[in-house]
Image (cartoon, rainbow, N blue to C red; front, side):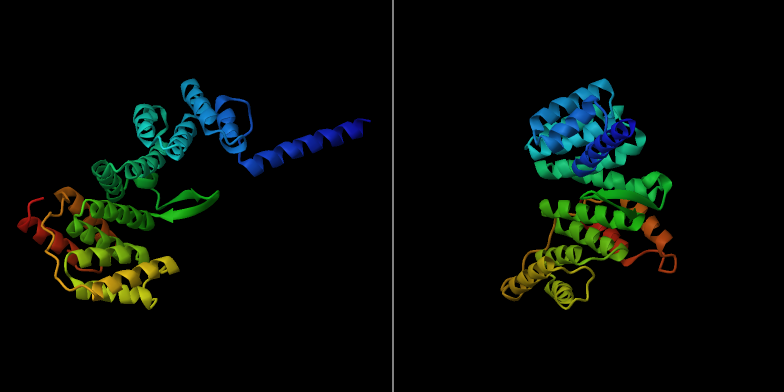
Length: 295
């Protein structure tokens, strides 16, 4: 009988463990656990939000509760509300969580079309990198995507942030600034998607020959990471370029890249590539443009 009871208890424990693994719900009975259960098991986002609020107010896993709540709000098209919640309650979160909170906030700014705030936060995160304050001073960090963990290097993170910054400038039709930022990103960690955006910026600035070379390199597989979607886009842009009959006016918006931001990125690149010339061509372009155009 005792052996039977032990067997039954073990089976129940196994079932509970399997439940938590399948639904990725933490164990326990606090408000945060109830929120995750509503979100992932019951598929009731409104109920999940109620419990996430309760978790934050009760101090129950506040870091995770705030981030998860913001994600659910975004899914419910309540991104503006999510932004205000993050701004109000991130002071309750640990220092180690601030970087991931910033990433969520950048995504929310993008969703809401708040481009200027997105640019400010992206440049702030890039400053942390060249000051050596990102990743808590470590060369890599652990990231998570689709339930899987992987390592991200400072180089990869810098290139990703620069790519996002370039995209934000494109939304403001500031193709000069976007071009400079995308070139910098490609120097650090090149990929076909950012190359495609760079080619688009060059097209907008009537530098067709440079854009043509970029698109052809993507189509010929000379650029890293060119998947089918990116190659199709490169082909569409190349076709549009070839059909172009008029030169577009040069972008006169200015760089909108402040002095300390540019200098900080230059120091970062020099640290990674000391064998190169002290001042990279991309920053010569920034300085020249800054002198000629009003930011």
